[in-house]
Image (cartoon, rainbow, N blue to C red):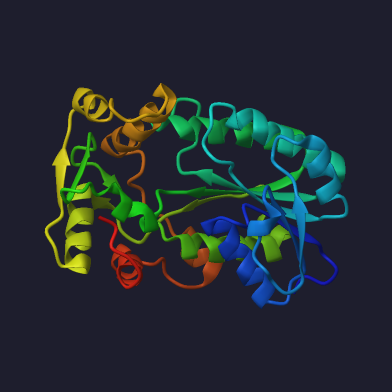
Length: 288
């Protein structure tokens, strides 16, 4: 399947990168896991561990020498994330990486409503200019995170109006990323919009969560002004609040409603519905 091709996975201590790393290991693929804290790296057959943060160009170059294909899971949200992404891409290019698979966001654009989607667009543009072969996986919002939208009172609150979002399962993204990595030449230059099988209002999301947890969960629309006021007490910087609020306004604007077939095209099976995602979550935790 992969012969002598070499692979590296970033974000291997996280939910998405870790899923991909485990899939590659299960397929007998040797890989290098790039992590900031090696003590947290998963213990996987055939996996070497390299310590390298995105912004540490020297460490990234050392870790990626001799690597053909890299999964670049976007860094944690910070004001300087784009700068760190550019540093990583430059180091990967200098190390001789051939193909970069970047986990981006649906509708990435310089004028995207969701503020962090603008970071993804800037990163995509830098990758395009690097000369590397690339594939962009533009994910919708994670279905796995929908329970985290619910407040302690059982309400989802935000200025999404009646807009719709085609939330996507992290397992689907991991399967799609694994498929692209292991057959990268066939996907060079491609951009895939990874979505769930249905586009749902937040009221419909709340109804799915209600049935899964057997308790009343509702969606309470806010105005934009109300959304900022309700989050004003959070001890986070303004850019983070902007990102939170714009998650909902992007839904209201219709920028996250499209349903695509990329998950099925890449994995050979239909995308996972929200009901199936939350049914697995409910067995392991109560989110409120």
